[in-house]
Amino acid sequence: MKRDRMAPFLTEGKGMLLAYDQGLEHGPSKDFDEKNVDPSFVMDIASKGGFNGVVFQKGVAERFYDGKVPLIVKVNGKTSLPQGEPLSRQVCTVEHAVSLGAKGVGYTIYLGSGEEAAMLAEFGKVQEEAHSRGIAAIAWVYPRGGGVQNDTSKEIVAYAARAGLELGADAVKIKYTGDSESFSWAVKSAAGVKVFMSGGPKAATDDAFLGQVEGVMDAGAAGLAVGRNVWQHPQPLEMARKLKRIIFEGGQANDPVRG
Ligand code: FBP
Image 1 (cartoon, rainbow, N blue to C red):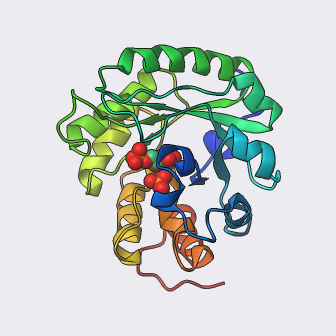
Image 2 (image 1 turned 60 degrees about the vertical axis):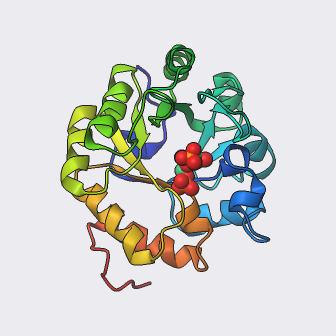
C-alpha cells in the first residue's frame, strides 16, 4: 500500500486531532456559541494549538481549510433529526477529499445498528479507494442502535476497535471505557491499528477530561480526536497545551503547563 500522502501521525508517533463536524451531526444550536460557530475560529485553534490533524466535512474544508494542519475529510455524515436505527451515508467522494488536500478520510460506522451492513460495505469501498490514492482511512466506530446496551463497556469498545482492524482502517476512533485497564483491551484488540479516543461532550472540569486522556495514553493509545472539550473551552489554546503535554510528552493531567 502507498502511504506517501498519509497524515504523518498515522505512520509515526502520536496524534492530536481537532474534530469539527458537529454542525452536521448535532446542529449549531446544540454545540456552538457566537465564537465557535465560525469555522475560522476552529481552524485557528488547530494551527496555533499544535494539532497534527483537523477534521472537517467537505463544505467547511472547501471554504475554511487553510493548509496549515493536515486535513482529514469526513466522507459520511448524518443529522440528529431522523428517528430509528442510525445510518450515516457517504456524502463526499475520496477523490474530492484528495482534491481538497486531505491526508486521510474519516467514516463513521454505527456498530450494532440495524443499518450496520450498509456502513460496513460503504467503508470497505472508501478504505480501498483511500489506500489506492495513498491516504489514510480512519474509522469512527461508535456502537449504537438496537443491538447495543452499553456503548462504553469494555467488551463493546474492544469490539469497535477490532472491527477497525478487520475492516482495514489505519486508525480507529472510539469512546473511552472509563478506565485505563479496560481501554487497554481495546488497544490490544486493535492489534497495531492506531487508537484514538473520541472526546465526547464537554467534561465538567478540565481535570476530569485530562484524567481520561491520561488513562487513554497509559493504555497504549495513539492519541485523541477531540472537538467540544477544546473549542467550547474558554481558553482553547491552554487546553491544547495541556493535552499536548500528556499526548506527546508523556506528562500527567496535573502537571503545570509552561509555554
Ligand atoms: P467531540 O470530541 O466533540 O465528541 O467530537 C468527536 C466526534 O466524533 C465528532 O467527530 C462527531 O461530530 C461527534 O463526536 C459525534 O458525536 P455523537 O457521539 O454525539 O454522535
